[in-house]
Image (cartoon, rainbow, N blue to C red):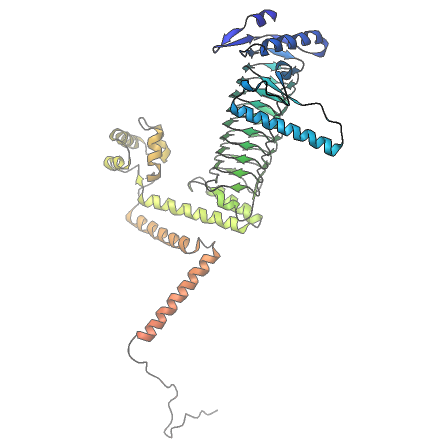
Length: 518
């Protein structure tokens, strides 16, 4: 170890202490070695003007591992280490100091305890590499300010770890890491992007954390409860293809950019109560098996929930939300493939007596049906369109020839099948998908019948929102009555001529009305 400390290696142009592949025994029964390990390594890492990195890749660390003992202690007061920090980090350090000072004063005033010892923060100056490192004991990384990047691909934490109140100044990578105990990240700040993709968690606690850039959890798996309450995602929150075996709570969390739950699977309950969404939330292809609670959530002007192809069974799962509001933020791009989902959502709201939300989804269903019929009438059918019409649609001559050759072999089944053809890329598909259709050619009679149905549904949606808007129905009815009354009065007043009066009981020869026998 002393030899490695005396001869740092160069990694990415920066000096680094190389302890890769070592077995480091820090168990209490090996206390003498542990004291020397921390003392020598801390002195080497934090001395000098150039920060040194630490590489523990493929190492096995036995016993508790304390990162605080490898860091510089920054007292609650004083600016001795400020030259090492950026302006944003200095501002955050001042905030941390102010918060710790307020907590100390509150503790003295309410609990009547003597003034506690001045709290400290810890600065880790260089890069930290923990790729494939195995920590057999608990890891302590609380109240640390990591000034360099942290790379921990495939790291294993067998007895949990705590990075509560830590700050990460540069990109952080924890891809494919395993957290077999409780992982505490409460109050952590990530100033740059952080990647937890393909990681596995037993218990995760990110309460009151803040992500200033991308927060990536793609394909992460959570075996037990996960807590993300009051988390502020300033950048994109990518939780696509995640698996949540236990309950997960995002209570009062805030999302400034897009939130991706694409193809995620929620076995336990999901709590998004009082969350704030400024951008769309993507739940495309997700699975909800129990409860999705959106009660009192706030959606910005451009925010909505994309629930296309959502696996939702109204008999087993339930969707909760503020009555009259949650139905307005649910969205699907097309009716194809989503009819069963929309029926289940309507049934869900009917069971909870949220009539306004159920009506809103029924109106959405019929509006999508109207768009589908309109596309069948006006869109270009890829299975019978001429090459010239395909070129007017947006294809090149070569792409149109490829489509014509393919449909002679086998007709296209859906519009997305064009992506499997040579020469047609995603950009072309996005450009033409809304103006193309794949269907059996319509005869003249079928086209007229479909056009009549389209006109009838369009009128019904325009005048009554498919019968779901009582105010609109009453308004249209009052206007219709007023127009009919005006027409009747006009015909009666200006119809011309004078009406003839008829007496159904003409008088007899004496001028008197007839006398009936009875």
